[in-house]
Image (cartoon, rainbow, N blue to C red; front, side):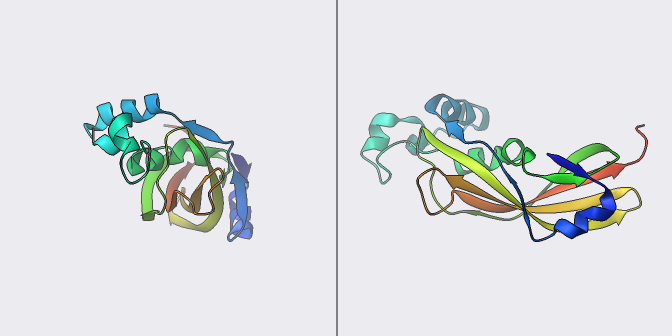
Length: 155
């Protein structure tokens, strides 16, 4: 994460602001996500059945990959100086483009899409985040990630 004066954020709109390190999605993580979300579909949790399925192995849940955006994109975001708090404000235009096979490595590439004052002391930042899969041309997902920054004094 890079912190800049709020009035300089607009200068970076349309530019790549960073890339995360590669992150491995293993079967244990997939199984834990299945347990947490009660989504035990065999393409995610049954390696033997998945080996005979359309992907030849288990795959991560699309929402597992999406849920990693906060972590993966944190290294590549630019945020306003003087913020006392940042909130995940949601996502726009999420697209799951390519399944993430078990033991794949993924990383996020962030591009600052928009910066606007939502209300006095609040800046809404939109980053287009692309999650790449190592060795694959087609990304796992693309989403606009919204972050709300609160400027000023805490409390």
